[in-house]
Length: 340
View 1: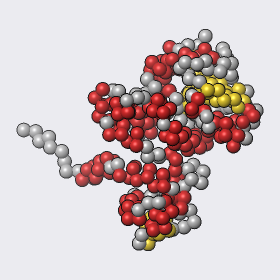
View 2: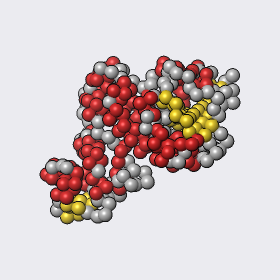
View 3: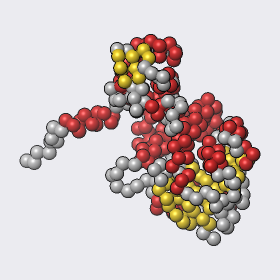
View 4: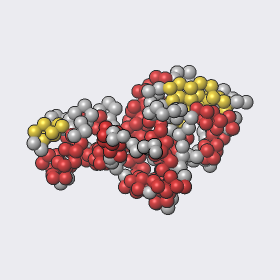
């Protein structure tokens, strides 16, 4: 009889145990919320000082920081005294590519993940099952969580502004509409780098409420209009040279994406362009962060990240043709034009 028992491969066992651990991801989020890395900018501090400054329990914080230090995030340079490491530096709020706000520890998200089995069995978002409403409706009803999601997106936008903007020639446009652009962080960064460009931010009322202050802070408020509305139900501001959908379409299923694209197509001139800035799913087993985002989106909203072919088909069904595809170190830039 053929022996089908697996070989005793201890490295694989240890690697799976490492990948399956959720202590470190939760610990990272918790110390980001406390702002621990910011307190260590000037050098190591005893955990007693860190606990006092963050309002945390000294013993609990010590045990958490030791677990993180075992993974290279912080270092215990003396008994119960911690310092920053290269992996901890991006958790500082003043880091040029700070990730401190990119890892919010939101109980609503965690509760959704706890029922991820529902998504696997049904294909429906576990978030809806747990909370009795969609992710978007939940954020609208919980402004404090919506604000934290905005901070998360602003954190990610710093990275995108450094990688995506250099991958496209923006200087040929005089006007751009950022559709579903949140609090305006990306558009503010774009306008600051393109002084001849005028912009319009278009998103839901509770989402754009903080935009005027952010645009003013970036010094571009005089070149940017803020329009509140839904890209499902309200007309998109018409007649711009370019329309941007940045990481918007993956949040929705194909039916909703078709509605969004049709609404955009109606706003576009014959010579307007649509720029999709999103992570594209690659073929095969190669690692790509888009594959992780895809599962997260499935649990949270029921949306999906898509392959190039999937996206091209959705564009064609809405009267748009895919013109160019430009990968960047983060997102892919897909340029679409009216097909007729």
